[in-house]
Length: 291
Image (cartoon, rainbow, N blue to C red):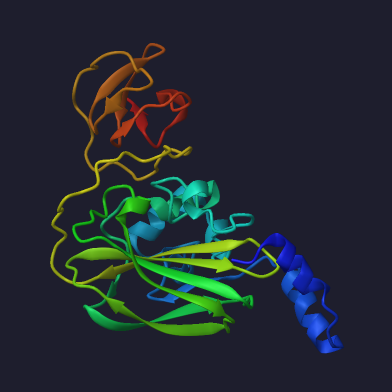
């Protein structure tokens, strides 16, 4: 990785006029960049379905969580100053959104995201870059055998497939990855790290299906490094019926159907979670419903 000083030195080299134009264009921040188009990333799928009226239940939930603008801005799931510090900057459970609340719908833990059918062996992937940047690094990963799509995606769930250095991407850049033996649903995860004139990086989650079922094997035991700052927004499937089990308290693990009292009102838990200060039942309708 070039140091900031070497980046500045490169920009200072005297170049022909046409080359100077290229450098200036690369150094100017752009508002849109790119994402995986094959297998399509979650944001690309929901963009294609139409942010105003998506077709799949997963995209409907993602739009409900993030709003429509996130999917009009489908090509900027990115961090500006990461400079390779991906694991430091993005907490477990928020890899698909790059840790950004704007894209929190991409982190929804569901087993029904639209998925591309794949099989072990060579597979051609395509990255759609609306603003290609020269001198880039592309890293590709796949989730480990036994990964459970209904659990938070952690860095420890990812298995490295291949890295491509010194890439000058075009609008549609293709590579071939060798997919390992897997069954059931998995994620192909990519990191596009700009190496010249910027420390910006872009992130994608693409759902794939090898066929068969996911059988958890030796799941990681380490908890997420940082809880999400926004509560999940998936709707409940069954109404709770239990009597209140106590007063709501931060730090308590609640399951779907649990009921609590808060400020004299009874609330029913809509999704399993561990309560945090700021997630009080009266202010988090995605997690609690007054009964």
